[in-house]
Image 1: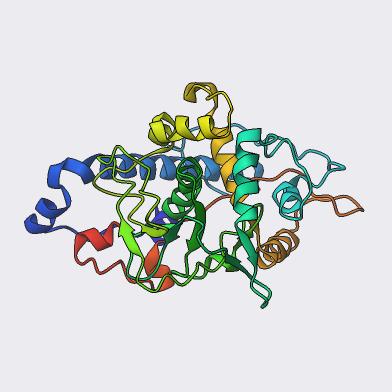
Image 2: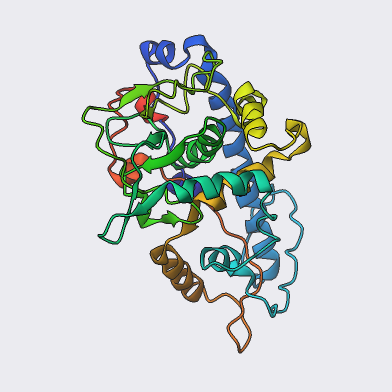
Length: 335
């Protein structure tokens, strides 16, 4: 309990006004109940680990008697001749890793080729979009509600399919809270190409609102910014984009049979999209190697690391001194 109280900060008691605000339409009630259950499970797991440790420690160590039993850990496997820890790194360096990403289908390659043919070198080491090419911009800045890292990445992955079915080049402008290029670099498509100067501010269209059944924007609009891709009201999902007539129209244009959406596992669609858009930046790959070295993971004389498990620890925006999008009170607390 002592360690638990140091690791997990429990929220302060809420006033009646706070409770009324955060339980509007019971949207937060389900989330909070789930979080309480998860925290209880974590505490039980910690106690189980203490019990297991005590059984392996000298007899003078006293463990809590109420802790549930825990199965002993699996023995460490011998180091593999393949660096299993670096599959994503190999993919980021241009090598084929079919186990991580299944081979891309022709219909996705067709869009990638269209995207590549739509950009050109800008003479300064970057790329620019050719004049007259229709495009859509996913944007995440300090004045746009684009969510946390999971929401942002998921939105970009979905928007690739929106751009594909609507015949537009996808561009990404995501400098907030830290430039996306610090962590992810363009892979198969040059999403960081500079858009042409249209002489006026780009429109922002709320295409991803689930109430918008038509995902195709009039071609007279050369480029537009995409409105919010997550949050309320509900937004389009991978399923709704693939079931939309926009997608069946795309397959007609490239003269291919439209696959029934249920025939393609969502996992494949997401992996195809992510790795078509991104590869990890050199800074991320270097940091990963540093972490593996500092963790002293078991390895053989060639430096090949044994399989390992990574944990994503969510510390919240406050730990990074990031403003909670202007929210105040309990909503900011639980964001």
